Length: 119
Image (cartoon, rainbow, N blue to C red; front, side, top):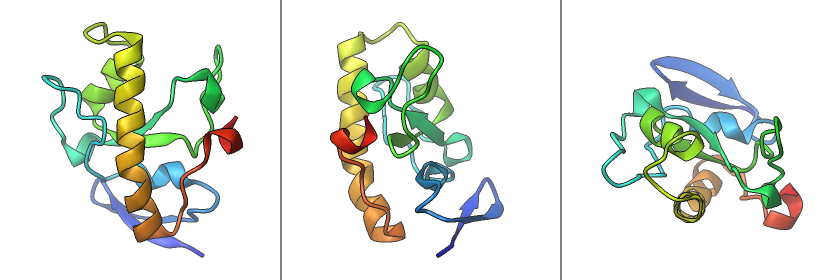
């Protein structure tokens, strides 16, 4: 099964079962950090979870199923920013994932990964 999505003005064919993180391109920002988010779909990329429980490690990204669409500015804040605490970033990512997962399932048939599956 392949899904065609429009990402930055280009049609991209995606097999959602193999690369669900690619479904993030061209979406709205789901992180929405207050005072930071610009919600520009042209800059949205997959933001991987930074939580150990999702497979994150030193020099290792979390599982690709554990991604949330994020604009450039929110993605930067999540990974390198200093305006929010680690706990606030975790809460913001979890909230974004909870909002993104039903849409991803409805539009592309890609279910959310359970925490136990991703680890």
